[in-house]
Amino acid sequence: MTAKIISGTETAKQITAETCQEVAELKTRHGIIPGLATILVGDDPASHVYVGRKVKMCQDIGIHSERYDMPASTSETDLIALLAKLNNNPQINGILVQMPLPKHIDESKIISAINPDKDVDGFHPTSVGRMVVGNPSFLPCTPRGIQILLERSNIKTDGAEVVVVGRSNIVGKPIANILLQKAQGANATVTICHSATRDIATHTRRADILIAAMGKPNFITADMVKDGVVIIDVGTNEIGKTADGKRILAGDVDFAAVKEKASAITPVPGGVGPMTIIMLMSNTVKATKMAHGLI
Ligand code: GUN
Picture: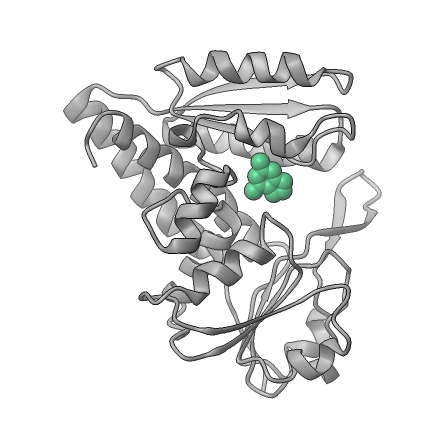
Protein backbone atom coordinates (compact mmCIF):
# COMPACT_ATOMS: atom_id res chain seq x y z
CA MET A 1 0.00 0.00 0.00
CA THR A 2 1.20 3.51 -0.76
CA ALA A 3 -0.38 6.15 1.40
CA LYS A 4 -2.62 8.97 0.30
CA ILE A 5 -0.85 12.21 1.15
CA ILE A 6 -2.95 14.38 3.47
CA SER A 7 -2.19 17.92 2.36
CA GLY A 8 -2.45 20.44 5.17
CA THR A 9 -1.53 23.09 2.64
CA GLU A 10 -4.67 22.37 0.57
CA THR A 11 -7.03 22.12 3.57
CA ALA A 12 -5.54 25.26 5.09
CA LYS A 13 -6.19 27.06 1.78
CA GLN A 14 -9.89 26.16 1.94
CA ILE A 15 -10.16 27.33 5.56
CA THR A 16 -8.22 30.48 4.75
CA ALA A 17 -10.82 31.35 2.11
CA GLU A 18 -13.62 30.72 4.63
CA THR A 19 -11.90 32.78 7.32
CA CYS A 20 -11.21 35.62 4.85
CA GLN A 21 -14.92 35.70 4.11
CA GLU A 22 -15.75 35.90 7.84
CA VAL A 23 -13.27 38.75 8.33
CA ALA A 24 -14.74 40.62 5.34
CA GLU A 25 -18.27 40.19 6.70
CA LEU A 26 -17.26 41.47 10.14
CA LYS A 27 -15.94 44.58 8.47
CA THR A 28 -18.76 45.26 6.02
CA ARG A 29 -21.70 44.32 8.28
CA HIS A 30 -20.39 45.47 11.65
CA GLY A 31 -17.42 47.75 10.98
CA ILE A 32 -15.21 45.45 13.08
CA ILE A 33 -11.59 44.51 12.33
CA PRO A 34 -10.22 41.63 14.42
CA GLY A 35 -6.88 42.33 16.11
CA LEU A 36 -4.12 39.90 17.10
CA ALA A 37 -1.05 40.76 19.20
CA THR A 38 1.98 38.50 18.87
CA ILE A 39 4.76 38.61 21.44
CA LEU A 40 8.16 37.11 20.78
CA VAL A 41 10.81 37.17 23.50
CA GLY A 42 14.42 36.44 22.53
CA ASP A 43 15.99 35.36 19.29
CA ASP A 44 15.17 31.71 18.74
CA PRO A 45 15.40 31.47 14.91
CA ALA A 46 12.54 28.97 14.51
CA SER A 47 10.24 31.11 16.68
CA HIS A 48 11.08 34.12 14.48
CA VAL A 49 10.04 32.14 11.41
CA TYR A 50 6.75 31.02 13.02
CA VAL A 51 5.82 34.48 14.30
CA GLY A 52 6.70 36.00 10.91
CA ARG A 53 4.27 33.57 9.24
CA LYS A 54 1.51 34.37 11.72
CA VAL A 55 1.91 38.12 11.16
CA LYS A 56 1.92 37.67 7.38
CA MET A 57 -1.20 35.53 7.51
CA CYS A 58 -2.96 38.30 9.49
CA GLN A 59 -2.04 40.77 6.76
CA ASP A 60 -3.18 38.39 4.03
CA ILE A 61 -6.66 37.90 5.50
CA GLY A 62 -7.32 41.37 6.86
CA ILE A 63 -6.66 40.91 10.59
CA HIS A 64 -5.00 43.87 12.34
CA SER A 65 -1.74 42.62 13.82
CA GLU A 66 0.58 44.13 16.41
CA ARG A 67 3.95 42.49 16.76
CA TYR A 68 6.02 42.90 19.94
CA ASP A 69 9.59 41.62 19.65
CA MET A 70 11.34 41.81 23.01
CA PRO A 71 14.95 41.07 23.97
CA ALA A 72 15.86 37.77 25.65
CA SER A 73 16.69 39.75 28.80
CA THR A 74 13.05 40.91 29.20
CA SER A 75 11.85 40.44 32.77
CA GLU A 76 8.74 38.55 33.78
CA THR A 77 7.38 41.79 35.25
CA ASP A 78 7.79 43.70 31.98
CA LEU A 79 6.14 40.93 30.01
CA ILE A 80 3.21 40.80 32.43
CA ALA A 81 2.90 44.60 32.20
CA LEU A 82 2.64 44.36 28.39
CA LEU A 83 0.00 41.64 28.71
CA ALA A 84 -2.01 43.82 31.12
CA LYS A 85 -2.02 46.60 28.51
CA LEU A 86 -3.08 44.26 25.71
CA ASN A 87 -5.74 42.64 27.92
CA ASN A 88 -7.33 46.08 28.24
CA ASN A 89 -6.93 47.15 24.61
CA PRO A 90 -10.29 46.80 22.79
CA GLN A 91 -8.50 46.79 19.39
CA ILE A 92 -6.80 43.55 20.39
CA ASN A 93 -9.01 40.45 20.44
CA GLY A 94 -6.32 37.78 20.60
CA ILE A 95 -2.94 37.57 22.32
CA LEU A 96 -0.25 35.08 21.41
CA VAL A 97 2.99 34.69 23.36
CA GLN A 98 5.31 32.53 21.28
CA MET A 99 6.74 29.56 23.16
CA PRO A 100 9.29 28.60 24.32
CA LEU A 101 10.16 31.59 26.50
CA PRO A 102 13.68 32.19 27.86
CA LYS A 103 14.51 30.03 30.88
CA HIS A 104 14.23 32.84 33.46
CA ILE A 105 10.57 33.41 32.59
CA ASP A 106 7.92 31.13 34.08
CA GLU A 107 5.74 30.15 31.11
CA SER A 108 2.76 29.15 33.19
CA LYS A 109 2.79 32.49 35.03
CA ILE A 110 2.78 34.30 31.68
CA ILE A 111 0.01 32.17 30.20
CA SER A 112 -2.12 32.79 33.29
CA ALA A 113 -1.65 36.55 32.84
CA ILE A 114 -3.49 36.49 29.48
CA ASN A 115 -7.19 37.36 29.60
CA PRO A 116 -8.91 33.99 28.91
CA ASP A 117 -11.29 35.80 26.51
CA LYS A 118 -8.24 36.66 24.37
CA ASP A 119 -6.49 33.30 24.80
CA VAL A 120 -6.44 32.37 21.10
CA ASP A 121 -3.70 29.80 21.77
CA GLY A 122 -5.98 27.91 24.16
CA PHE A 123 -3.17 27.54 26.70
CA HIS A 124 -4.74 29.36 29.69
CA PRO A 125 -5.82 27.01 32.51
CA THR A 126 -9.40 28.26 32.04
CA SER A 127 -9.35 27.23 28.36
CA VAL A 128 -7.69 23.91 29.19
CA GLY A 129 -10.31 23.18 31.86
CA ARG A 130 -13.15 23.99 29.47
CA MET A 131 -11.59 21.76 26.82
CA VAL A 132 -11.20 18.82 29.22
CA VAL A 133 -14.80 18.95 30.44
CA GLY A 134 -16.04 19.47 26.88
CA ASN A 135 -17.37 23.03 27.25
CA PRO A 136 -16.98 25.61 24.44
CA SER A 137 -13.43 26.89 24.53
CA PHE A 138 -10.52 28.14 22.48
CA LEU A 139 -8.83 24.92 21.38
CA PRO A 140 -5.04 24.97 20.93
CA CYS A 141 -4.23 25.58 17.29
CA THR A 142 -2.14 22.55 16.34
CA PRO A 143 -4.49 19.97 17.92
CA ARG A 144 -7.58 21.69 16.51
CA GLY A 145 -5.85 21.78 13.12
CA ILE A 146 -5.21 18.04 13.34
CA GLN A 147 -8.86 17.36 14.20
CA ILE A 148 -10.08 19.38 11.21
CA LEU A 149 -7.50 17.79 8.92
CA LEU A 150 -8.84 14.35 9.90
CA GLU A 151 -12.45 15.47 9.44
CA ARG A 152 -11.88 17.03 6.04
CA SER A 153 -9.90 14.00 4.89
CA ASN A 154 -12.89 11.80 5.82
CA ILE A 155 -10.90 9.87 8.40
CA LYS A 156 -13.25 8.51 11.05
CA THR A 157 -12.17 8.89 14.65
CA ASP A 158 -15.31 7.41 16.19
CA GLY A 159 -14.23 4.24 18.01
CA ALA A 160 -10.76 4.39 16.42
CA GLU A 161 -7.61 3.44 18.29
CA VAL A 162 -5.64 6.69 18.42
CA VAL A 163 -2.10 6.58 19.75
CA VAL A 164 -0.43 9.89 20.54
CA VAL A 165 3.33 9.87 21.01
CA GLY A 166 4.37 12.91 23.06
CA ARG A 167 2.73 14.60 26.04
CA SER A 168 3.45 18.30 25.58
CA ASN A 169 0.94 20.89 26.75
CA ILE A 170 0.88 22.33 23.21
CA VAL A 171 0.14 19.16 21.23
CA GLY A 172 0.15 15.75 22.96
CA LYS A 173 -2.09 16.38 25.96
CA PRO A 174 -4.65 18.56 24.15
CA ILE A 175 -5.02 16.37 21.04
CA ALA A 176 -5.58 13.37 23.30
CA ASN A 177 -8.28 15.27 25.20
CA ILE A 178 -9.94 16.60 22.07
CA LEU A 179 -10.19 13.20 20.38
CA LEU A 180 -11.40 11.61 23.61
CA GLN A 181 -14.50 13.82 23.84
CA LYS A 182 -17.89 12.26 23.24
CA ALA A 183 -18.45 14.40 20.18
CA GLN A 184 -18.45 14.38 16.41
CA GLY A 185 -14.92 14.31 15.02
CA ALA A 186 -13.73 12.68 18.25
CA ASN A 187 -15.01 9.71 20.32
CA ALA A 188 -11.75 7.78 19.94
CA THR A 189 -9.99 5.35 22.26
CA VAL A 190 -6.84 7.29 23.09
CA THR A 191 -3.45 6.12 24.33
CA ILE A 192 -0.65 8.57 25.14
CA CYS A 193 2.96 7.35 24.96
CA HIS A 194 5.90 9.35 26.29
CA SER A 195 9.57 9.10 27.22
CA ALA A 196 8.86 6.76 30.14
CA THR A 197 6.59 4.40 28.16
CA ARG A 198 8.17 0.94 28.40
CA ASP A 199 7.65 -0.42 24.92
CA ILE A 200 6.33 2.28 22.61
CA ALA A 201 6.11 -0.02 19.56
CA THR A 202 3.58 -2.34 21.24
CA HIS A 203 1.27 0.67 21.51
CA THR A 204 1.99 2.28 18.15
CA ARG A 205 1.39 -1.03 16.31
CA ARG A 206 -2.19 -1.04 17.60
CA ALA A 207 -2.94 2.44 16.26
CA ASP A 208 -5.55 3.08 13.58
CA ILE A 209 -4.44 6.71 13.78
CA LEU A 210 -0.94 7.53 14.99
CA ILE A 211 -0.12 11.09 16.03
CA ALA A 212 3.63 11.62 16.35
CA ALA A 213 4.48 14.69 18.40
CA MET A 214 7.62 14.07 20.37
CA GLY A 215 10.15 16.13 18.43
CA LYS A 216 12.56 13.35 17.44
CA PRO A 217 13.42 13.16 13.72
CA ASN A 218 12.36 9.92 12.00
CA PHE A 219 11.61 8.23 15.35
CA ILE A 220 8.57 6.29 14.08
CA THR A 221 9.83 3.57 11.74
CA ALA A 222 7.89 1.21 9.47
CA ASP A 223 8.16 -1.72 11.91
CA MET A 224 6.34 0.37 14.55
CA VAL A 225 3.08 0.72 12.59
CA LYS A 226 0.44 -1.60 11.22
CA ASP A 227 -0.71 -1.80 7.60
CA GLY A 228 -3.31 0.82 6.77
CA VAL A 229 -2.52 3.17 9.65
CA VAL A 230 -3.25 6.89 9.30
CA ILE A 231 -0.21 8.96 10.26
CA ILE A 232 -0.30 12.52 11.52
CA ASP A 233 3.26 13.80 11.82
CA VAL A 234 3.58 16.89 13.99
CA GLY A 235 7.39 16.89 14.03
CA THR A 236 9.22 19.89 12.61
CA ASN A 237 12.81 19.02 13.38
CA GLU A 238 15.54 21.07 11.80
CA ILE A 239 18.12 18.61 10.51
CA GLY A 240 20.30 21.01 8.56
CA LYS A 241 20.36 24.02 6.28
CA THR A 242 20.43 24.36 2.50
CA ALA A 243 23.30 26.20 0.81
CA ASP A 244 21.17 29.37 0.80
CA GLY A 245 20.44 29.08 4.54
CA LYS A 246 16.90 27.62 4.41
CA ARG A 247 15.95 25.17 7.17
CA ILE A 248 15.75 21.49 6.19
CA LEU A 249 12.96 19.87 8.18
CA ALA A 250 12.28 16.26 9.09
CA GLY A 251 9.16 14.95 10.77
CA ASP A 252 8.98 12.54 13.70
CA VAL A 253 8.11 9.78 11.22
CA ASP A 254 10.35 8.02 8.71
CA PHE A 255 8.14 9.24 5.87
CA ALA A 256 9.70 7.29 2.97
CA ALA A 257 9.35 3.89 4.65
CA VAL A 258 6.13 4.45 6.61
CA LYS A 259 4.18 5.78 3.61
CA GLU A 260 4.51 2.31 2.04
CA LYS A 261 2.49 0.81 4.93
CA ALA A 262 0.12 3.63 5.82
CA SER A 263 -3.24 4.35 4.17
CA ALA A 264 -2.78 8.11 4.63
CA ILE A 265 0.04 10.31 5.93
CA THR A 266 0.81 14.00 6.44
CA PRO A 267 4.05 15.28 4.90
CA VAL A 268 6.58 17.56 6.62
CA PRO A 269 6.48 20.34 5.61
CA GLY A 270 2.98 20.88 4.19
CA GLY A 271 1.02 18.74 6.67
CA VAL A 272 0.08 19.93 10.13
CA GLY A 273 2.12 23.17 10.02
CA PRO A 274 -0.15 25.21 7.70
CA MET A 275 -3.21 24.12 9.74
CA THR A 276 -1.76 25.56 12.96
CA ILE A 277 -1.53 29.06 11.53
CA ILE A 278 -5.02 29.17 10.06
CA MET A 279 -6.50 27.85 13.32
CA LEU A 280 -4.91 30.82 15.07
CA MET A 281 -6.69 33.14 12.63
CA SER A 282 -9.93 31.26 13.15
CA ASN A 283 -9.62 31.53 16.96
CA THR A 284 -8.92 35.27 16.59
CA VAL A 285 -12.11 35.73 14.56
CA LYS A 286 -14.01 33.72 17.19
CA ALA A 287 -12.58 35.89 20.01
CA THR A 288 -13.61 39.00 18.08
CA LYS A 289 -17.17 37.79 17.59
CA MET A 290 -17.37 36.87 21.29
CA ALA A 291 -16.06 40.30 22.33
CA HIS A 292 -18.80 41.96 20.29
CA GLY A 293 -21.60 39.65 21.41
CA LEU A 294 -21.97 38.16 17.94
CA ILE A 295 -21.68 34.56 19.20
N1 GUN B 1 5.35 27.21 20.02
C1 GUN B 1 5.13 26.10 19.27
N2 GUN B 1 3.84 26.00 18.91
C2 GUN B 1 3.22 27.08 19.44
C3 GUN B 1 1.87 27.54 19.41
O1 GUN B 1 0.96 26.91 18.83
N3 GUN B 1 1.64 28.71 20.07
C4 GUN B 1 2.62 29.39 20.73
N4 GUN B 1 2.27 30.50 21.38
N5 GUN B 1 3.86 28.98 20.79
C5 GUN B 1 4.16 27.83 20.14
